[in-house]
Image (cartoon, rainbow, N blue to C red):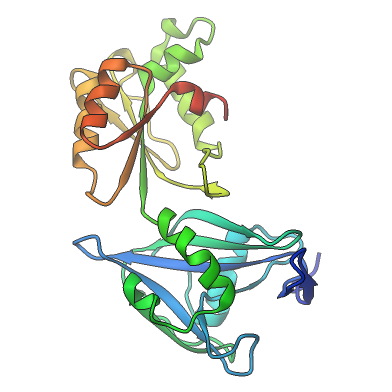
Length: 279
């Protein structure tokens, strides 16, 4: 496993030649202003490069030992002088060409991060609004996947009804120590890959609402815990109400009354099985 062992040309099932023996990955950095208007960081490729003069993402070949997120961040550092600070990975969209894949790593940028060409592969880097991207001369691969990527690049929020999910999990004796049962569920969830209909990997914001005897359970990596002062349902409804207008919210609960209330606020719902099947 050597660095840059992925460099080289590969042929996909469509008969196209691609750079990257083990596939490739690129970074789509997205920043939203206070009104939720997104801007994306684009790279104009050097004229001498493959599809030179087109706009796409900073990215490149994936090494044999690399995950796509690491590849995208490494390439962004090399080509756009981005350190990775101020970026929060949200998901990975996989474009499968048959035997060869390109992974678009979608990352939320805290600000319009300054980016300059880090090597000779980049001619320039600029932030564009989504409509502006449509007016660019795009790299053919990016142009093909861009409509699908647009549909999944909004930030997502998953809200867990912990009392309901713990009950559905039905661990032996869970009711004797509800806080410990909630802590086990949070620890297991923090290490799980949540399912998504489109994305190969999904890293949404997760809020867990706990109530009653489970209150006081500590937050875990990637999951914020909200202690309900009273009804857990009321606390979940408040979390949904406080979500940003452009966030897609998914509430995990089997409580019928709660499901009706949160769908009335625009949230999506799914049952505990959706989560428990992943644990």
